Image (cartoon, helix red, strand yellow):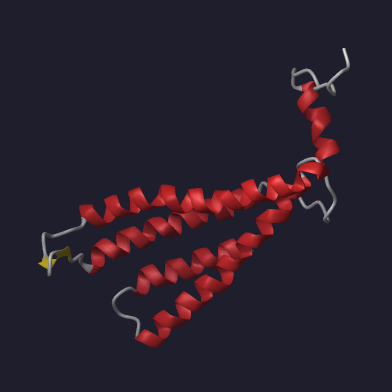
Length: 152
């Protein structure tokens, strides 16, 4: 729900870029920040599908996902900005037109929309660790269950 809301805020940002008064832009940034806080909800998801003894590592790896996503999206967004660059420079820095920013921010909106769509694949666990329910499904897929060390 929050990811869908964040997509709508990005969409409003893209559609009003360059025309929205500063207080409106500040409101959109505030909403993006508040809804972006929903990222912490991914931490229990990571813990609930892994063995309880590995919950800390699972949460850490889940937290890493946001940083990896931020790193991987910078290149495509920069490419969209560069594609819209008209050659203008100011004090040695590129100056991009509003249309270039609109394209870059539209890509951000697309990434958020993809994330919101992926959330539709999640199943509610009501806080229960479901690792034990996932294990038999993995074993039936043709992989042999792992045995504890020392057993043959």
